[in-house]
Length: 157
Image (cartoon, rainbow, N blue to C red; front, side, top):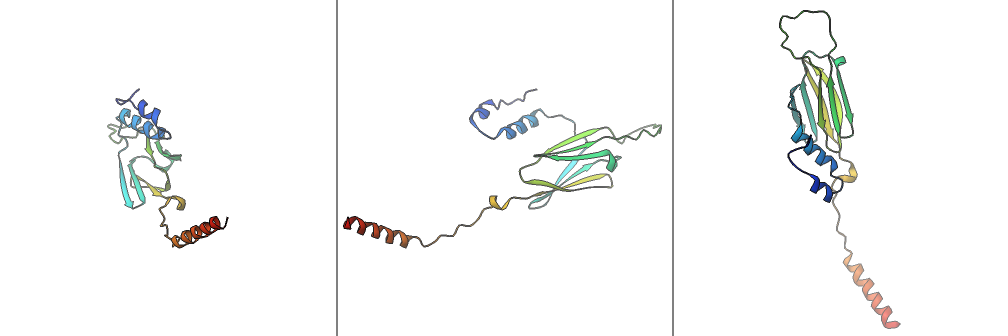
């Protein structure tokens, strides 16, 4: 299925942005299924938490996978205990939620408490990518001295 936007002119003239265009296309096409509902919480400058409402699911029913720049949360309930329900209003259908993660985002922890699955994330920027202050040295006198030396060498030649 194609999106309403055609990104092919941008794909032809850029290098390394394939993942960005794929995400844009997926978001415009995306499914309308909003199950299970979730909150995205900013805990600190570089810390986040995803809270998913997974009432009725146990730890064994949920699978969390972090691969490359994607977090996948799957739920499959397997409790056919023979109970006969008059009305079943608590949704326990299978689900799969995918979250795109930016570079340097790492999943640190997951916890299930009171029907909420909380997944903790942290952004860890490598030292080599952090901005660093460059000190300005007093190199102007060295240039003057070296240019004076080269001038004398030319005169002597």
